[in-house]
Length: 508
Image (cartoon, rainbow, N blue to C red; front, side, top):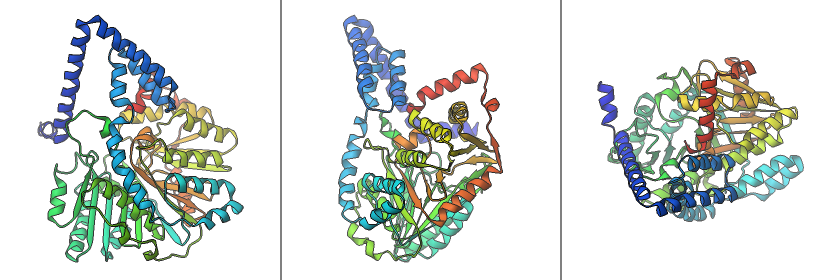
């Protein structure tokens, strides 16, 4: 009873109730209006037909278009109007206008080395094309003189984070989807408070929806009282808008000009297995050092200057101030956002799959993909590439897990090997290919990560971290169940449920 009362009194419940109330009122008003006037009713039905025709002509993702067409067919009276109100990208136009100037301004400080692409073109043309794409579409350069250290668990990464935080001398920047009070965050917060007392610039940015159930409503005020500058991304307020779909799912920690972290790890106790809700939590992280750290700094500053009134001066942070680290290979940090028509995160995965020769392996917590991604995976398998995907054995969200499993049969029949991690939940998001290429970051193989969220990753070429990621995946396979066609088969009820989930997956 106490738990129920706690949920009912939570701000997330209150705001969601108010939004549902707005939707209910709108629906009631709409139905009354159309029932009293047949001409108005006919006009809205015609509008729905025109919207379907309009959708058919758009270059949007086919799965997204199909989901909206089904909604309009189910509700022909107001389906078309609903799409015009929330279906396009108009609700996030204001956010885009805020972001574009900061992207343009920060681009003046990012230094591109043209000799990298020229040398890579002679050595590996397909990778040179991927680097060219990322540099031009994400806006961040490739780096030599940098290193990436891979951590196969949240526990190992957390230990390294604490050591680097203790050594901070100038600034600490954190941008995370989830921050939850507990052993992990409290340990970090203690260091942050200490560093503030030492005069170090400490800034924290967290996503409001990601932290809604785990932090107090005005936690940013608590941090400010401690001397920590804080921004809450895209506050969840009681106004009906799809802008709440666009979350800051990134994980970025930058310390001075020296090191930066990213990966799947948020700041909550399950990520380091101090608390287990879904069995063992399998996650990963990567620590960057050298010139590549500058791109991570700029990623953070882009978001901070877009959504904070306290603007940072980019000139305080210069490429030349970052110490070089002698290491072979290339490192290219990149970001992706939902405010344009370029899906960088998905394109990175597709390019890796399409250029794979021997193998391509994946960690992903969710497998809810469009036809292009499914086709690329199957075509790779059919041309002899060893394609393996590791997904969770114990889900964190049952509906999403059912949607993930709905793709198994199609992929397995096409030659893709699917494995479920028996000990618990896989939260790692990465791919490794042909002993030379890998990407690790925050991007899941699902619609939200690929199309709706602010995300980031690190593209790795010919680095030691590539071999470490492969080793981690191969070791993890020992604790996995290979999904056969027999295991894919479900009864009629589950097939129907999974079919419905697949149709509406782009809108969930």
